Length: 92
Length: 220
Image (cartoon, rainbow over all chains, first blue to last red; front, side, top):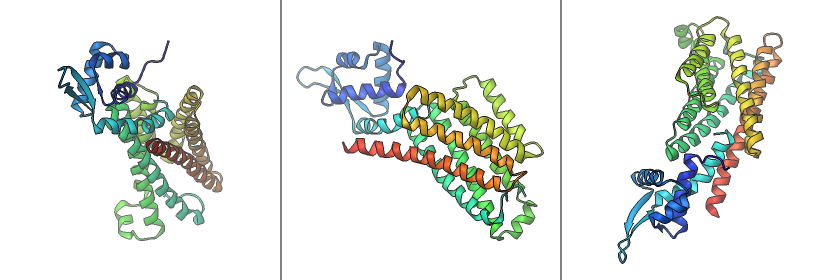
């Protein structure tokens, strides 16, 4: 069984999933990619939206809801490796 | 005066080293704060506060020893009736910093135990006689336990950076024993300071590796 993911890792996984899908992802795909329960994913996404790392878009043609990544979200991903290495060194 | 220790020729160097510690602890505090801003997890905030307190402690030590060795504080000396007050401020901030580091690193969640640790470390060092002795004994105990914790982390992570953190805290713990040895042999103080300096430089090297790694990844 794998180790429990830290909050930092979960946020990174969500943002990475959006980025890897070209910056926009359907909620169902995000649920699958982030490996979270529906409620947890909703909680994390709304928190990331509050922090302006994620935004909600609507597809013009299909009218489907999609999640996009902002510059702040991309900045988080570039800082993640550094912070992860730092916190791992101290055993957090 | 408790603040001026070791041989006379070493005093200016000792003061200068404290400025190096200020910079290193500020850097660690800054990175911890960055981690807190990214995750909003309180443990990173406490970690940042702990290193912030250490910076203040080292700055107080630096400023007081510089003023004292350059003899520019006749009035301040009269007002404070000796520089033991400066040492007490240094002890207070250092003990609170390491207590916070201990609580955060060992993930002590129970508020009663947290309060007990903070109270014990405060009363055993600041509010007591012979605080030079008690300060270094208490600091040795805390640093040794922290080093042991970082050693366990190294065994788990097997990364070079976690090894550097362990080596750094082990050196800082050993330095406290040499500080105690100064009572019998003056040069022991020099060994303690050099050991502490090397400990902090190892921590600094670890930080540079972390910062460079981030930069490399961003370039890629």
